[in-house]
Image (cartoon, rainbow over the protein chains, first blue to last red):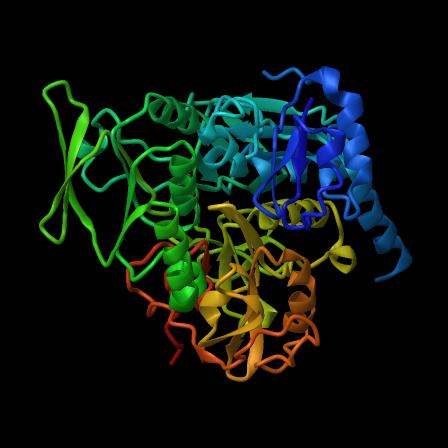
Length: 70
Length: 469
């Protein structure tokens, strides 16, 4: 699956970190580091983490719809 | 307009949204977000996305951090999509020309792609090391693409004896931070007086220099690298510095800023130049005479538009959210009539994670002449600072104090007085404005990723008409 975090919007509340600890981590006090393409098995965890964000900074792909490319 | 003509225009919009052809050149963040917006706004015509890289749109900020560190694979930063796009993807083939007369984009493979409306989102590439022979040595790697990141990550994972990073802008500094996290010996050579001075000025540069040295970086400022030397196998081994010293190095990363990908537009008669593609606040591209075009739009790193907050100077912003919002606004305006068009007037914002500190900023620092530390403690590297220009606040930066950035952003948006009033919380001990110490324009520095490019929309390429006598 694919995610992106808007790190301008992210305020480092870190609510997401314990909900998907292998995907989202803090580096220092407030710098979020994350895995942009985590394993699909983690989707439920990641969705919960995204929903927990007080500033809605985590965008998750709409349904992992893979489009063909030419 | 009478009712009949009004109906005709409405019919044209419907017809365009149904059967029109839109081509987006540039398949990265700005291009992708523009494509999503076009579909969201009911454009059901033919959508073609052309990109010179073979990968689907991917995110670049992680490349200098998570990827180099070895946590995330270089090909694992693909961007999520907000919707299905039904686009014709032409990836791995560069656009090489634009014919505005016949409204066609020429591709490297000789094909011509016709359009009714065009979005230019070709972005930037890494500025290469100036000596091509030295740049070709094994171990000399610039960072811009996922492929670059993969190569550099592998080179760092091989435990080189010393890494040399040339240029201490944001990306150079982030890479130095990763090197230290990996336990590698790293030298950073910067021509200016400190890291980040192009974007944040000398006061913050001194703080950034301390952070680097505390982390064990061999930081050398006021120094340029004059040449690189390889061994018999063509692998880089030595660097000669301007102070006469020689360094033994196994990996060299020139981090010298970017070059805008505008060459393919040469001859098209648009206001393009080294600073990008001139456009109005609605992302519509100017031609060389400063006349706005109707069918050509630009977004992302190369869009160069006048900004109301900065004396209407033209700005280029190599910022992530400028690509997102610029792409969205350009797309909206591509499918909207005059009265519905929107401006893209972002309050510039950026972030950078390095040495365990989250650096965030809003506004345009290089526009300022003064700075004041407003909150927190520089010693603890938790602070906020505001930038002023002639008595008004024009930018702010925070180190591990990002929650306060909105407070400053709101003041910048209304051009509040500088120095700003103390926030009433966490005030810094000595709120005295001091010179921000930005390098003079034209002085080579650590390459700011915001450039004030003056008032001239056309890089003075206009053909002036002689007065009729």
